[in-house]
Length: 454
Image 1: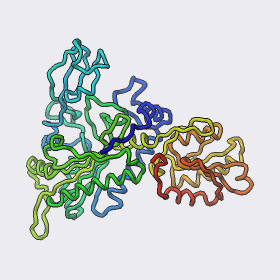
Image 2: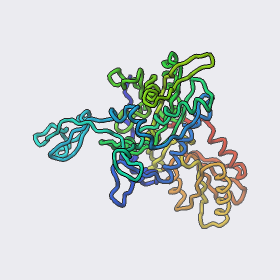
Image 3: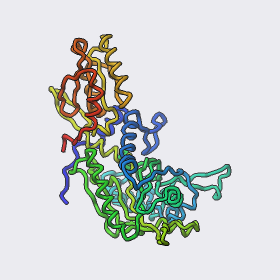
Image 4: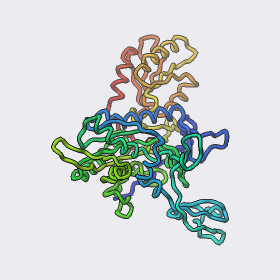
């Protein structure tokens, strides 16, 4: 597989844009923050909502073989014992007695010495590394008034186990026969020792996960099907082929229960890294919970057919999707001898679909008509009224948050009831009758779109 060219944007530029335009802020910043935790601002919330909605539409709304679930964040600790997380969800860690930093023992080649960052841990005489120790990645908490081992519980590190332990409930109530899936969106928590790279790896993240239950002899074909489906979803919303690839795990990389795992990788500024994983988990999870709970989690057909379904799992973090689309959409160009930064987001992903701008904010008639248009459009779409500063600056502000269209109320509007619509990507402008703007926007948002950078 040929290598794609390096990304055109640095992670620092994405972080700066997110901070400047209110997508993402460091969490609890006035107290010095907390490593690798972030708060989403207005535009970040809107973008995440769009991603969540589009994923749910593709996984549940547009399919006849899928149902939704929302399981608890804190489950009975026995769930995590049965799944293997208590005993096996660990990273090997080493500490440096000199600089007091902690490193993953299997990732030392990617780490920097605390005293001499140009060196790796262990490469200088000052380094004094401990023997590797296993560290569990789950956040431990207490349930109830007493803090002892009997009240110990965990924040879920994944949403999948909540789906598996509800398999029987869904099977009975939905009266479904495999193949069928259960989809869930929710917060997960991992006590990562080496988080970083902005939204790519965090201790608290929002996960979208689907478990697709299939007859055992159909597992391989469904595994391939879901890889293709998920790749097509990213392409549909504008990720460039040159920055998206599928990498199959080698047998040595796969979990012990997996007969096949593939990463959908994106070319982030940090290099090719996992965007989404698709795994053939076999019958491991349902079998484990059957053995530990004493409840049979299997399919029984009307003719006496009985089997434990195998499971295909596409799993992804909304945060990683957002980061990928921010990177893919970020662009800089010179227009009229001025630098323009623009987010070329698919209109379905854009936090704001259109901006309404009075050309002269002090002109009462322009403001009145702009406000009326804004009120009309926001009944159907997320739109923004913007009267702050010169019109050029307002265009640039909307470009940076990815707004695909801008409607300007100007002098001609007062004469003939037409408005100017400006396209974010092409910068083309045309006049529209004021009364047809709502219908025009509805149609424009449904038109096929591809990245001008492709």
